[in-house]
Length: 165
Image (tube, rainbow, N blue to C red):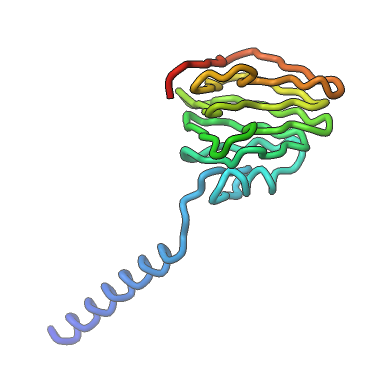
């Protein structure tokens, strides 16, 4: 009887370990979510977003420069930091799109590096979070291009430029 119980206990433990291993195999933590759908990168979430969607960050994220926003979308920093990788504008908002930046958490930041957000016939709404440009660079930050009608509305958050990295 003891041998049977020991065998059953060993099988239960083996099944538990196998299940835990299989569940964790190949999974990646989501950096961003749209509704219940998770995305491994912010770029994937931006591509998948439909007009009117809010992308909620789940962790700090990096984004390549020249990421195009061509539909009305919002990014909720949710207390996380987005860092721009590359040497061009972080975001280019085009095609009459409205790009909204907000922070439902505490301390969310959009670190643009040396460049900024280019608006071309589009709108930027800053409702929260910190938009940081560092080191300061003439013309960096939020750039409203003289292409069509563009508009920046700021109801919260702040824009910061510093001379240090």
